[in-house]
Length: 171
Image 1 (cartoon, rainbow, N blue to C red):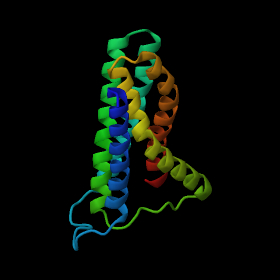
Image 2 (cartoon, rainbow, N blue to C red):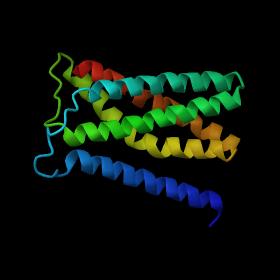
Image 3 (tube, rainbow, N blue to C red):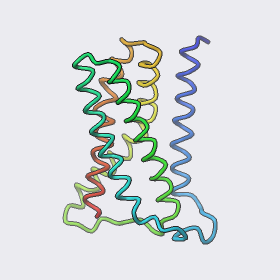
């Protein structure tokens, strides 16, 4: 097995573990008394802000690479990845401690659930895509990086952007 195959396998394993862990932490059983034991009421706003920041950073990163500012592009994209990672941590903390789901009660039920469903599905897909794209750029496999980035960027923008939309629809 070559070095590239090794790291891609690691990325898929890590992505699977993250997705399963998030699903378990949100849907699985919690220790008695944990729900509602910590005030996490401000975290939906924090999560929306992190998603908004990620969206802006992704757009900036795209503009920078189009301007051939490769080092700034790398820096901004690493910050976008960090912002998404912070979002994931905050999201898990919120769902671990909150008591009961926040239900949508607005007039656009069908639209809301379409956005929510596509957001959730693409959020699971973006984990390995973002990691592989980051890896390809990091090890200077630029042709392969560009090829997958054309897929990753629109999906990542959709996931982070709809994260903000979902927040605005709920709150």
